[in-house]
Every structure is written in structure tokens, then in C-alpha cells.
Length: 421
Ligand code: CLR
Image (cartoon, rainbow, N blue to C red; front, side, top):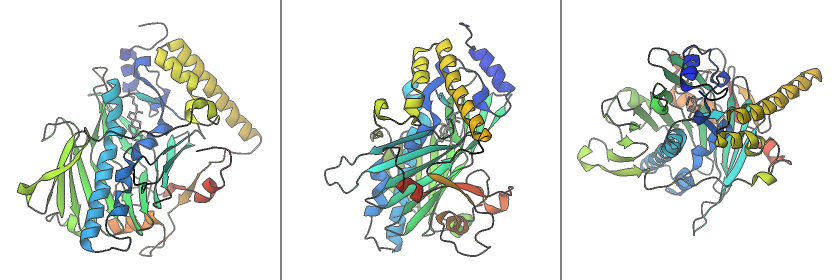
């Protein structure tokens, strides 16, 4: 054990008796990431061409079954392609999963993916990510492609449990993501999978996804993706099986899906239609399609609320591996934040969230009534709960009374004057 640094053993002890807030735990420097959790929203779009693909399937007004199915398959492919960056990239590039920096209230991360294609039909795609709550930590984001009128917006909030006997961290996601292809008049609800952190005992933590993710389209089509890991039937890490059904009813009947996709989300997968499993063809290969990283302004041009600028000293200390420098620079930032909150209370002027707003869905719309909000419509079509329950929970299993969600505030972003994208 060096200096004041907690050893891995001490860290495990504190995890075993932890009280629900992972960020209060002092972890040894080697497990700390110099990247703030507010940056993780970028992983939704490291394959912009897949994100935008549905726009180019059939004409804008095409609503025939085969076009709709093809778009559902395209959205499913985009989703599968996001998973490697989201859940395996730290492990693959740094050797282990890392503990991200806990974003402060109002912290933002912005940037864009520039269209590098020859045809220029994609256009630029912008990322806005903002820490909208500190206790509990909640990040909201919006990914905007104006040229194709395509929007992804959502938020993430996790609840963590520890299984003391196996020292596994069990993480449930509470947010949801809504994908809108406004020119097509089509939108999709994407539910977020559960996950657990394994390998803690060996000091080499990694993420394993579990449970299911759903992609519910306004066209009725629904994809159910089931995740499994090493210890499961296939025996391979990062495995999944996705089935696409015509609608929720067909899914519940457990009949033959329109198509089935299976394989590894961090590797390759294949697809077959109906029951023609002998005619399986390649679907997606994460190994051969490298992620396109977001373009972010140099730190010298950033606003003080921008993540990389605000965390610069801490990030450098983490890279140096100096426990003293880490805690010194972190305390500086945290104390400044505390002081800020105190001032806000004293002057009765609470912090204003920048680009997002909280929407209370508990009373609107009345039961059985249609709503223009994509989220409520999609919940109704797929039978999902609109309440604050783990992502992907169905109505009948919901056990919460609140239905408050973070949504993108288009107007606020249009009026943005300080932060340059
Ligand atoms: C955040 C939202 C992203 C997907 C995602 C990926 C990895 C998750 C992260 C979310 C939340 C925080 C998380 C992380 C993996 C590890 C980390 C659960 C859901 C915890 C806080 C760190 C545990 C510490 C050990 C590594 C020691 O879209």
C-alpha cells in the first residue's frame, strides 16, 4: 500500500459494506478513469452511418411491411453496434472497466461527428450531454442530426446493488432513450439493459450485460434482445440473441419471429429470417467497423462548464497515478461545487438545467388516450410502464408512483449563447 492510497483489498472491503453511493468510495488510482460519466453519452453515436441508415430505406412515405421491417432491422443493427463502445471499450483498451469521474451539476460535454462521406448525405451530427442532477447522478443527452431530421434523446440513471458473497455489483438502468426519424414520422423507444460488474476479486473488473433490451417502434415492430455472458449456454462473453416481431402481441405469443439475430455484440453476429436458420447470413462485425470518435474543441476553447476543461487537473493526476494530486485536485473541484450550492441556497436561486426539462407523465395522457409525446405513445404500443422503474419494465410489473422523466428542451438549445458546439 503506497502513501494514503487505498489498496484493492481496502476497496473491496468498502464495496462489501457500501451504502448505495459508489462515488463515496475511495478507489486505488489504477482503477480510476480520467473520463467523466457525462462523456458516456457519446457512445450512442460512434457509428453515425448506422444511426442515420433508416432515413435511406425506402422513400420517406414508404410504409409497406417490408420497408418497416427493414428499418426495424437497421435500428436494431445501430443499437447492437453501440454496445461495444458503451460497455466493452474501457476493458478492451485499458485492460479493465474503470470508475468514471462523477459529473458535477451542470457539467456539459458537447461535440460533433462531421460527415466524412463523399456523398455528404449524412450531414453533421451534434452531441449535447448535460449533468442534470448530482444526487442521484443523472445525465441527459440529445444527439441531433438536422440534415436528416433525426434525434436521439434520453437520460441515464443507475441503481447499484452489491452481492456480498460473490462481490458482484449489480446495476439497473432507470433511463430510456427515444429515437426519432421525424421525416419518416417514425420513432422508437430503446430500453436499457441491466448489467453487472464481475472480476472484482481479481482486481480486473469488467461489465457483463444481463436481462433484456427492447426496441419498440411506432410502426408496431418490436425487437427483444436477450443478453448472456460467459457462464451461460453459449459460453461466450458478450453474447446476445435478438428477435424481431411484427408487434407486441406476436412477441407475447412466442411464435416465429420475423427474423433472429445472434452472436457477440463485441464481435460478429448473423441473421436469419423466419425459421430458415439454415440460411443464416452475416449481420454485423464489431471488429471490422471501427468507431468514429466525436470531435471536441480543444480545452483552451472550452467553457468552464465543459467536462474536459473542468476536470483537467484531476485527469492529469489520474494519468500520473499520484494519489495525493488526485485527492488535492478533486477536493478543489468538489469544494467549489459545495460553495456554489451554498450560495444558491443563500440567495434562493437554484441551479437551472440548461438544455433539458423534467416532464411529469403521471397524469397525462388519461388512460387509453393518444398523446403526441413519443415516449407515452411508445409505452402504450408496447405495454411498457411510463413510471420510474427499471428500463424495459412492463406495465403490470411496475411498482412506482412517480413518472418523471428528463426530456430535451429544443427551445433552450436554440437560444444557447454561451456554449459553442
Ligand atoms: C452509463 C450510461 C452509458 C452506459 C454505461 C456503461 C458503463 C456503466 C455506466 C453506464 C454507469 C457507471 C458504471 C459503468 C460501468 C462501471 C461504472 C456502472 C450505465 C461503475 C459506477 C463503476 C464501478 C467501479 C468498479 C469498476 C471498480 O450509456
